[in-house]
Image (cartoon, rainbow, N blue to C red; front, side, top):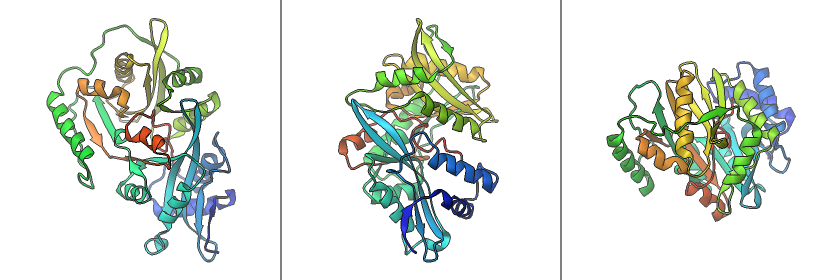
Length: 356
């Protein structure tokens, strides 16, 4: 047959077998559990739409030699509704690598879809090269990660890049990191204003997202069902001991919210962090106290430009490009949202949360 076509539910057993050959590790222990997860991920997600399919590459005998997954996500840019697509699980059979350029063909076909934007946030150097070769970019702002010690242990900056410093922006980040390393002393919390937390509700997330959305700010569009679906998938991920979420209250008003996931060793990943303008410090400091109170040892998160000055003031360690956030759009104004760090882009928006 030798054709590139949309994924069908009946292809999933072959996709599972292909993944077992390509990747050595999986959060899904059995083939049936991985097959169920793939079906949930690509055919039962809240945004499933046949206009944005995943793709497979067939061989001459009808066998599947390659795959790239697609998960559409609604976004808002001011009053305009856009569709982003998460590119995930790109895999090619060992015997099909090289001359056939199967991975490149799959990604190009996905990029040529009806969406306004395609992104990934678990990219390695090979994925970065593929994106850049097809007109995409590494979003440096969304490829920066901070770490905060919650138990007093010493952390240091790490901006070493596997591919070396290839542009001025990377070198600038390295210089800034060295400066911050010299300044990193003292407490990571500074605000002493009273805040409290309450159970995070989808309504709070939707309300604050509407406040973040502006003429020049790209944000995800949630409803109660889609936010709940994502939180359920996150809770099912075996690498986490528990998922914690809260909205931060100050003077009777919700000023921000956070979601983080704690591993068995006490290290915690910030999944989502948001605050009203001018309330970033109060929200961040409450997050730090909350994480420490839940037994966390280290808190790590992806940098949001709105928190950049605060992260600098706290002198927190930064890491660049481990992994990369990769973006490709035919619209310069949409791509610029990521390249300037203006988009609200948490770890719930692309593929970080996926537990394959």
